[in-house]
Image 1 (cartoon, rainbow, N blue to C red):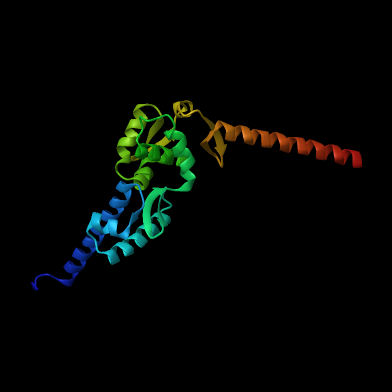
Image 2 (spheres, helix red, strand yellow):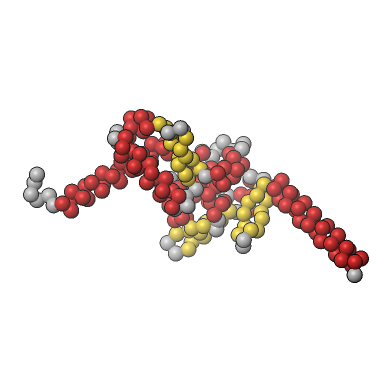
Amino acid sequence: MDENISSETLNELDENKEIENLKKVEAALFISARFLNLQELVMLTDVNPLMIKEILGRLIEKYNREESAIEIIIKDNMWKMDVRQEYVSMINKLATGNAEFSKTEQETLAVIAYKQPVKQSVIINIRGNKAYEHIKNFIEIGLVIGKRVGHTLELRLSDDFFEYFHLQKKEQDGKVIAVEEEDLNEENEGDERDEEKEKELKILKENSS
């Protein structure tokens, strides 16, 4: 071994190799959009099986720790990268009859809708650099409003977004969120029922006094 190569340099090389392998596995899961078994991951990434299992554990931990909109699902010793359950209904709503948006664009828009108002840097951290182009497109066609805040943009949904996808605005915990019309109607009916119950209780109290 070359005496000029220090142990520190070797450690850096090992670390770089680990990062490269992690990115290969992550990319394979992202691109495939389906469940992959261990053999398929080995063929796609050329990473040894023991290392792949370790990397999968690290990726699962990474996405859970970052509270990402993405998760890695395990089923029958197979792995798949997918959108978390809480985003599914929004994505399905965005996908219905709107073929001009790709699946990845729909997912990016769903994350913006779920988290808005949200900094562009946060969306990029969740969705990756591909989201820059998605956000630019959404702003250009008027679905998203981008306001300059420091070195990034603060993103929020425009009124055109709600009209385009036939969604209603609802305030929840001080934030404006998008809900389907039937959800809002069900909630309004629930509020009316609560009001009726309050009236009934008031009458009962008055009669008993």
